[in-house]
Image 1 (tube, helix red, strand yellow):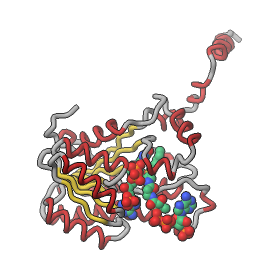
Image 2 (cartoon, protein in one colour):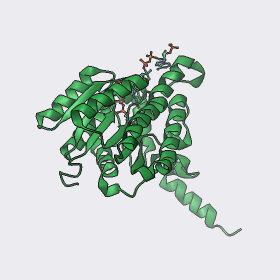
Image 3 (cartoon, protein in one colour):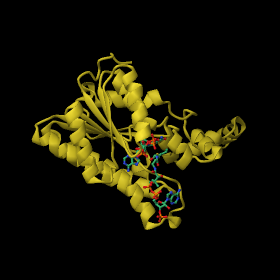
Length: 282
Ligand code: HXC
Ligand code: NAP
C-alpha cells in the first residue's frame, strides 16, 4: 500500500505498544522505516515486541512506564531521547476498560480507567509537547479513541467519558499548537478483537458475535486495516490533516444512529407488504 520508506527517519513512540493494536502499529511502522519506542507496565510484552522488530535489524526501544505517573513518563522520555533521539510522533494508544453495570463501579474502578485513558494521554502529550516546543521540533500526535467518544455507551461509562475527553484534547490542541508545527489526529476504531478486548469486553462468545452482527460490513476489523490508516495519518502525506478523527468501524456506529437501520432485519415478504401499503392511494 505504501512505499517502504514512508516513515524513514521518523521515531515513533507508542504507549501500550507491547500488545494488541499498539504492537501491530509498532511492527507496521517499523516495516515502513520508523525507529520504534514503546512503553507500558509489563516488561515481558514490551521486550518481546522489541525483539520481534530487532529480528528484522530495525531499531526498537522499550521502557517500563505507567502512564498515570508523570514522573515515570518523564523518565521514559529521557530514556528514549537519549537512545533513539527525540520522538517525531506520539501515539497515545494505552487504555484500560471493562464492561460493568455503572452502579456497580467503585470510585477506584472509575479512577483506574480515567487515570490511564484521560490523564495518561494528557500527561504524555504535555511532557513531550513541552519538549517539542522548547526544541522547536515539529511533531504529530495520534490518539486512539472509540466511536462512543461522541455517542457515549452504556456499560463502559468511565471509558466513554475518558475517550470523549481525549477527543476534546485532540481538537483543542490541533488549534492551539498548530503554529508550533504540531499536528493532532485521532482514529476511532470499531471492534478489532485483541487478547484484551476478549478478556475485558467480549468475555463470552455471544458478545463478540453480537458486535460483528452490528457492523454493516458483517465482520470485525483486520489489524492491517487500522495499522495502514495510522501509518498514513502520521506520515507527511497527511500533513494538512489536523484535528480530525477518522472512524474505522465498517459503518457500525452510523447503523446504530440511523432511525430506520433496524429495517435491515426485514424479510422480502415484509418489504413487499410495506411497498403495497405505502403505495396505496388514500
Ligand atoms: C468492575 C472492576 C473490574 C470489572 C477491575 N475493577 N475490573 N470493577 N468490573 N471487570 C475495579 C477493581 O475492583 C478496583 O476497584 C479497580 O477497578 C482497579 O482495579 P485494579 O485491578 O487494581 O486496576 P489496575 O491494575 O490499575 O488495572 C486497570 C484495569 C485493567 C483497567 C482495571 O482492566 C487493565 O489493566 N486494563 C488494561 C487493558 C485493557 O483494558 N485493554 C482494553 C482496551 S479496549 P476496587 O474498588 O475493588 O479497588 C478499549 C476500547 C474497546 O478501550 C472498544 C470496543 C469496541
Ligand atoms: P490492549 O492490548 O489492552 O492495549 C492496551 C495497552 O495499554 C496494553 O499494552 C497495556 O499494557 C497498556 N496500558 C494499560 N494501562 C497502562 C498504563 N497504566 N500505563 C501504560 N500502559 C498501559 O488493547 P487494544 O485492544 O489493543 O487497545 C488499544 C487501543 O485501541 C486502546 O486505546 C483502545 O481503547 C482502543 N480501541 C480498541 C478497540 C478494539 O476493538 N480493540 C476498539 C476501539 C478502541 P500494560 O498492561 O502492560 O500496561
